[in-house]
Structures are given as structure tokens and as C-alpha cells.
Image 1 (cartoon, rainbow, N blue to C red):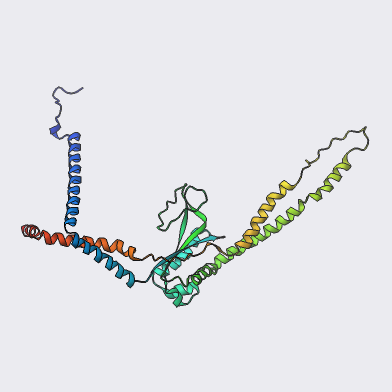
Image 2 (tube, rainbow, N blue to C red; image 1 turned 90 degrees about the vertical axis):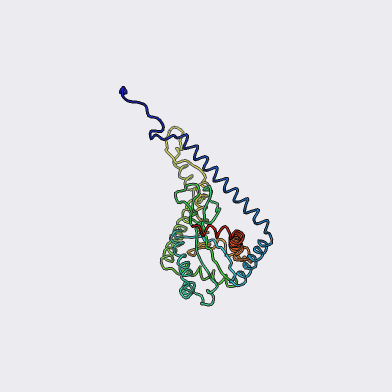
Length: 329
């Protein structure tokens, strides 16, 4: 029970009026959006009234972009998809990305030595980097490449594919692309640990293939003639004697042979098609379109030139008010 001397507090005694606070927040947000809208409308009218100045600004931005294009080396992107036959994808990606480190450090001699190429052939290489391929929906179909390495490894629906990786190369000339491809494959195949693991895989496949061939021969249906003859010999010749036999079930063996044939074909394909450490699923494609063309530079240069022109024009037009504010403060 409340004491008789206790009196109820009013909102003005320190308690927060949530409704009044919410109302003030709504008014402040509305005023902010109103000010932003007025500023945008003012800038649009300001630019339209001085369309000649900003038109020349646009032309200047495009011109600077063109100068940047012709003064820089061309850059082309090309992608290759590799199948790892024995090495985990994480280890293979980490191994290939050693080349990425050489490119970042601009260590052309180390890059040429790794790819077993002449130094003049690797001078056009800007970068080599491997990436995970993402399977959206977990349907074993490659959907996209994680170029930015932002995939969530805890995602169980969109997963990294474990049977292939993507290798992207950035080059300034694609004429030596086949030689670079061969050098990259040689760089992977010459790793001693990778070679040993791949040799063990092929040896195990060959042993299993030999065992499967023996099992298939043992399941030859003509060998079942012996079974039928032995079963017939156990039956009584005289009708006065009854013999109970617990004999095996007689059946054709084709259903037993087909799964073995499937395994045999898979092993033969694995030994024949995938003998190396990696196999090229999709080779480097030659793209004739530059990645650092006019649009690449215009996206950056034109907005920068426009903003600088806008700021300078505002300062010139309202230089009196700017001077007044500067003297006041």
C-alpha cells in the first residue's frame, strides 16, 4: 500500500514523456529530409542554369578518361576452371595463390621461375589468383565465382564446390596466354607432395581395377553350370526316399555384374582422363574487350571533375556570402 504522504509524480518531475520525444524525432527526421530535398532541387536548378559550364565539364571528363585509357597498358581478364584429382581445393588454392603474392610484390623473376617461363613472357602478367566456385542451392551446378572471398562458410545451402576451382589471370597482352597456361599447369604438377599423392591415387585405382576384373570373371554365368550339376546330383534317384536339402537360391548373375561394370568404367575414366594432379575443365578464354577501357576510367574521372566544377562554381557565384561567413567566424 502507498503511504498517505506519497503523491503521484508529474511528467515534469524528471520522467520522460515518450510520446513527446517520439514527436520531436519525427519532426527532426522530416525536417532533415525536407532540407535534403531542397538542396537537391537547388543543385539541379543551379546546374541547368549553367548548362554550358557543366557541359564543358562533361566533355573535359570524357577527354581525361580517354587520355588515361591511351596512356595506360591494356588489361584483359581470362578465367580457367581446374578439376583437382586428389588435392583438397583449399590446399590447391593456397598453392596457386603464391603466384598472386609474386604479382603483388612485382617479383617477375620469381614468377618466371615458378611458371618455368622466360622473364619477357611474364612481364605482361598483372595478376594470377584462384577462387572458390559457389554452388547456389546445393544442386552440384556451378553458379558463380567468389572473387571477393565473401562467401559464408557456415551457409549449408549455398556451398563451395569441392571438385573444381577458378583461376583468374589479368594480363596486358593475350598473345602468350597458351604458354602461361602450360606454365601454370607445370607449376602445379611439379610440386613433390602433389605428385606423390597423385601417384598413390593412380596406384590404388589400378589395384582396385584389377580386383574388379577378377570379380567380373568369377561372376561369369557359364560357371554356374557346375552349380546346377552338383544340385542335380544331390537329388534322390529312387522315389521311396525323401531328402530335404538347404540349397542356395538359383538366380542370374547379371544384376551382380552391372554394378561392378559401373565401378570399372569409373576407374578406367579416372585413370585415363585424370592422370595428372589437375585437369583443365575450361581453358583460358580470350577476351578482346579491355577491362580498363574508356568506361572504366570515365566512371571515376567524370564524377570527380563534375563535383570539383560544382564546388568551384558555387564558390565563385556565392563568393560574397562565403567571404562574409569567413570574416564573421
